[in-house]
Image (tube, rainbow, N blue to C red; front, side):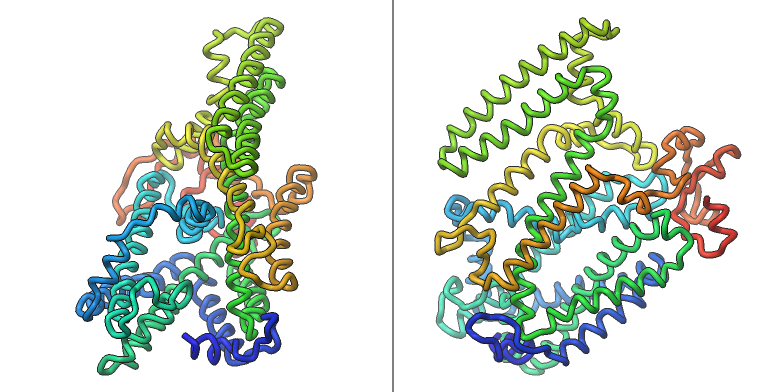
Amino acid sequence: VDYFIGTIIGAETLGDDGRPTRIVWANVGCCALVWILCFFGTAFGVEVTGKITYFTMGLPIVLLFVFLGRGLTLEGHEEGIHEYIGVWDMSVLTDKPDVWSTAVTQIFFSLGVTFGIMTAFGSYCPQGSPVVVNCCVIAGANSMFSFISGFAVFAALGHLSYESGIPVTDLPYAGFSLVFGTWPVVFGSLPGGEHWVRLLFFDLFLLGIDSAFAFNEAISTVILDTRFFVGTAKWKVHLGICFSGFLLSFMYATDAGLNFLDVIDFYINFVMLIVGFCECFAAGWGYGTEKTIAKCGAKAFIFYLVANFGSVALACGIWFGTYSIWGGFVALILFYLVFLGLSLFSLKKHMEMTGEDMSFGEAVWALSFENIFDLKERIEPVTKWIPGIWCILIKQFLPHLLLILFVNLAQSNTSEGVPIFGNYGGYAKWPYQVMGILIFVMTIVVFVLGILFPQIYASLALPPGHLALEPSAEKAFEAEEVSDSEAGGVLEKVEPTAVAEVVLEKVEPTTPEEVELAA
């Protein structure tokens, strides 16, 4: 571990303040190689990228089981695995409450949720792809891969504990060193160990570059779907993304590269939680707002909004301000009931004033759930069946929970008793804490600007005729399954009148004629 951090990363030249002092040019060269490979792996379309990832993702899965099998043959592996799944320390959930928030964001990061990665890849699926099945397969496979990896790592820890006579929990490995400090040591002690170590780092390289592929694709998909970049060759966009990524990676190629990585990685947690909240809020509360207000009245809608999120804000203030768990729950329920009552009263008055032709029960449904079920109905022709529980969670549970997790993480303290926000890891204020906080602040600014001045993002709007802007086009056809030999595995049966409106596969126009036809 010391060799890796001190010599490879170059941290041996850092001063007591931990600030960067030099650029490690060997690491700059490695970064350049990575971004060159990212460019050639993503610049020529998802079909090419998909074929590459059969290797870059398939081989690590095979190697995982090879490493696991090797780990289970090492002496002392039982002790490590016992510490992994046989010892449950539930006190950490109360002693370190920030683990609730960081655990959620770790899963977000692992899945690519809130980064636009799943959205980007999903946009290339054929019309009618079963989105629920895809989500379950992706989430399940990801979690299973992580779970099995834990056995391999802790088997190595058990062996190191056996060799050193130090209990597993006292071994000096955490964070990055769980991988970089365990398996290289274990393999290095075996016959032909240097080849095993090379294979391990090649495995880690493949896993890392897969993530880079995904981030690149998420960014390029958004760019190419905008009016401004219609007709732009995909390789040009990816060239710009990879070159920008290379320039940004210079700070990670300094002798303080791991410090930057650790700080940015932590503050990204706040970004993921707030972006996740905004996504759920937009779908559950933003979509169809005009229709809801027209049917139920602005007062009823606002009171209902305050009932949901004002109660959460008040409860968070009590939970994390006075540390009264039951007091927070009581305040949440009472606040919610008061404003819910005001909302229902306002709804009743609105119905009397406007003479709306619907029952009170129908009005309550329109206020509480109609918009999100309208969204479900709108997207189901493209995604197939979506369960109703998704609507309930998006509207009444997930945004509230993400808001609580955000506050929970923001108010957590370090081991020294100071707020973790702005003091993470004991790193210096400049450049580490300032840079991390700026990333979060910039995310908020981008979001607020979009609300106050939506015209700023006009150039990023979808081009006219895009399927997402023409939901009625879905009514123009009925999809039926045909064989791969007949239609390349794509579900399509398009009426003649809808041919110009409905695109069943994402096609990237490259010539002026194709651009004109797409428009």
